[in-house]
Amino acid sequence: MLRCRTRSGVTFQPSGGVEYALNGSAQTMGYPKVDPIWRLDPGLGNGLKVDISAAITAGQALC
Image (tube, rainbow, N blue to C red; front, side):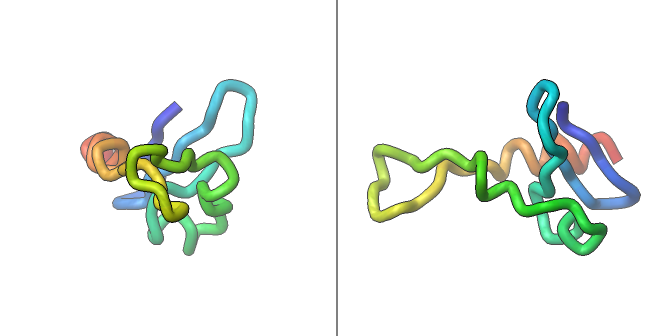
């Protein structure tokens, strides 16, 4: 579930799981970082993660 918390804090909650911050605004509200579930991008290598900017933009649109 993608949510907007207050004006700009975007969170994501997998089914039955923890609600994670997708941006800094949500982190400052106390939501944990998304790092534990943020997938590595196999095409980029070097430990880089998949781009989640579209999810953040979609969450901000809910505000």
